[in-house]
Length: 148
Image 1: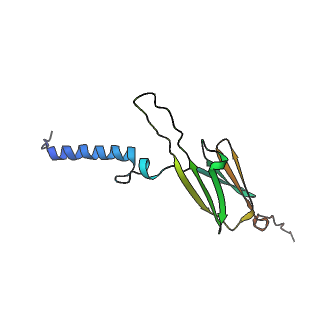
Image 2: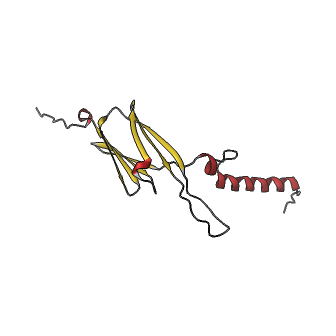
Image 3: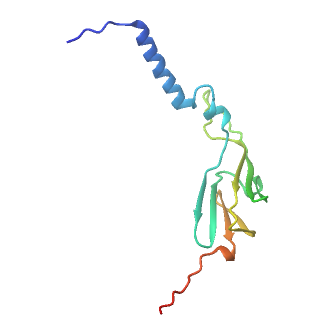
C-alpha cells in the first residue's frame, strides 16, 4: 500500500471544482447567467416535412393568438410575441417563479421550394401551426420508364 502525501490545497481545489460544476448545472455556464437572466422565453419548435408542405409547430403555452405575430419578409419567416407574467398572490413568505416570461423572436430562412403566397397559420390550444406549402413545380413527379 502506497502512502499519498495529504495536500490541503488539492482538497480545496477539488471542493471548488465540485461547486463550480454544481453552479454550472444549475445556472448555466460560468459568468453567463444564461438560465435565469439571459435566455428569457424561447418557444420550442418542431419542424415536419412531407411532399406537399413543411409544417412548423410552435409551443406557446398560456398565450393567445393576439400575443403572437407572424411575418414573411425576404425569404425569412419571423415569429414574435410576448408571454406576459400573470400576477400571483403571495400567500406564504416563500414564492418561486420557474416559468419563463417576456418577449421572444424566432426566425427561419424559407427554402426556395416554399410558395410564400400559400402560407397558412392556425392557433389551437397553445400551439401555433404554420403550413409552408410547396410550389407545384418542386413537388416530385414520377417519370414513367419505357421498355424497348
